[in-house]
Length: 147
Image (tube, one colour):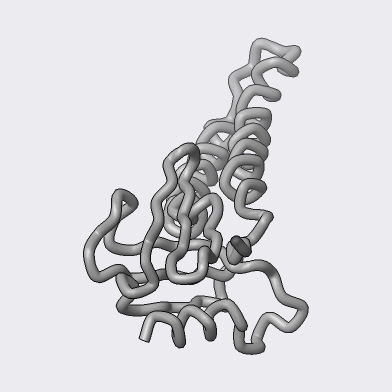
């Protein structure tokens, strides 16, 4: 089996959100801990990090959290893994392949004929390429295999 998804997906799905929300929590807690006088703090110390957390969560939910952890090519099917759950999707079940290379990370969305346990669409991030605007060989192979 050949892995056709990016190795950096775990970094984007697990580590980056942890760092993002950790830094925002630090910026909310640090003024409270470092306060030496009894004066009140400005509401901006709390409002801005909360807004950044809400916007960050919304963007991550749309672009990162729905990505499959790993997708492997098993010849006549794809093996998709989200956490500890895994499912084999025959190539004949794929009715559309959409490739969005202008997002970060790039996304490949497979629309399925019948929904699997992960839904009607399965999205993963392909491996990064040196020439990001060139055609992806993985997407080209999926397009020819699903016809």
